[in-house]
Length: 291
Image (cartoon, rainbow, N blue to C red; front, side):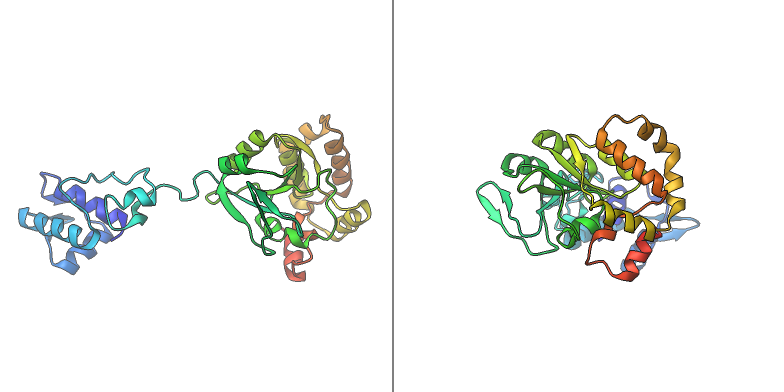
């Protein structure tokens, strides 16, 4: 049973009313089990119908309708939900609560606690950010803006310009998967120098500028960056970012951000970080340049 239907059925059997507004799920349930009767735009359920519903809830979902509230699963984890029903998916809780995605750069070990793990290319670990902060043995951080770049960081076409031997690579996050505030809390707690691998556009500079303990950008040599800018034609995206970024970047006192802002401004295009990953196909790269 779907959670929405279970909650509707619990409201029905725990109510003194007999008339209820129909929904698609309730209509299908009533028709399948030949329970209740439709009258106008409502469904009628008498005492006998309600007892049958209670029995079905117990048999099909493991739910005691006499003691379970319709909102009983709100905020529970999947494991906690099993105490109320046989279906752990009834929980509303985000299963990635407090989780971040981490890895190491190509050829280097992910060092957490006593473990030094060599993960396969393209893989990562997902952990509670507080656990990462306690176990971390890396001497810096590489924060990656986009998922595709994080996933394919082993295909980076240039050696990262970082002043640490083995940085922890962290995905910055995106809505509904890995929340950005978790990665930011992790950075605040680690207090390590952060090297930001972001898109080469005004918005990317703003992300770097707002990152806790930001040290510098991960960027290719100037000749490689210049060639990429010349191949990129996405002027529209660059210009669309200016209203919210230009004033701040013009007044920025961070020497590296100021330096790259002048380069980006002269290029006048928005270049995605994925351009510098050799694992990206030509078709995908062209799409990214136009993104």
